[in-house]
Length: 209
Image 1 (cartoon, one colour):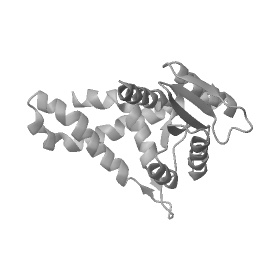
Image 2 (cartoon, rainbow, N blue to C red; image 1 turned 45 degrees about the vertical axis):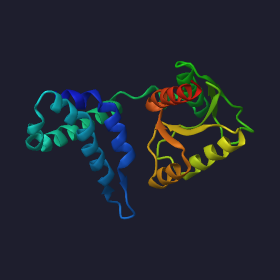
Image 3 (cartoon, rainbow, N blue to C red; image 1 turned 90 degrees about the horizontal axis):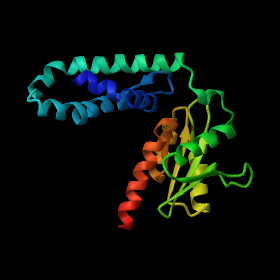
Image 4 (tube, one colour; image 1 turned 135 degrees about the vertical axis):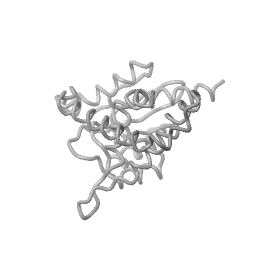
């Protein structure tokens, strides 16, 4: 049951690992935040299911195994991603922007790609329930840095938008995550864009009722 729960969330766990692990100035891989995320996953996803089955007393004895399986499944998922090249890797930057806009259109947003010039840092502008979402789309082969956050924040202010996000196929630098957290800009992998936008739709819909 616990392994099935890990497998069910394997993609998100893999993305979390990419986002939370980084190299310090000495070249060492820092995994502290990733280990905390593993513990949070066990606490919020596995613990409740064991409780329902009256098996929660087993958790201390299997916790190390669960952590090991999470690492194994994430490594397998990572390997699969490398072997099965994602289609976005064949896109050009402008095509990637259209790809992101289409993801929003599929779930009911009125989304469009802005003009290449004069967009004030907005690659995609999307509307739903009288709310505006601005996207900065980055098709990168390396982690996305602070500049993308600054650009989309500038665009959010220029368009008087309600929400702003950077969307990428890559991970984000530590400084980008820190800045984004302080200015309420979401940092997303494109695989999580629809999930993020659906939450915004529910939020705006509930406020209007």
